[in-house]
Length: 107
Image 1 (cartoon, rainbow, N blue to C red):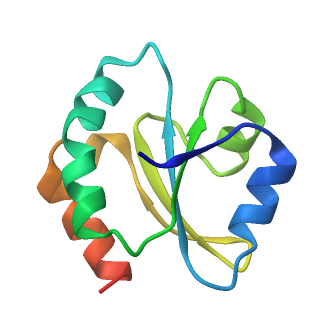
Image 2 (image 1 turned 90 degrees about the horizontal axis):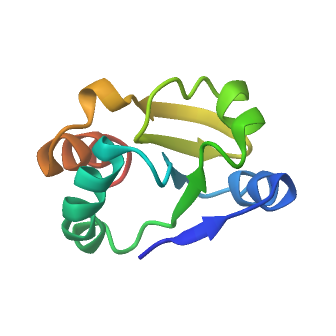
């Protein structure tokens, strides 16, 4: 499973990496997030070289707002402190959706 980011400072340090990182926004109460988590380990295994982190959208809501995370689950890609890609919850319904998104940015 991916590492959780629990504070704004850790988030800023993580996204400032010169290599791309993936941030998975989720919450405990979200049914779509639970479905996503059921299949995401398979996706993580295929992209095992990727640094993937999780942020609880409710606990760090200011970060979610800043990066326009309107729905959960969402996957965002950051590099050098900038958001370079965003897979919105409406488009994240299957392992294939996640794999297609990640393969565009990481091969």
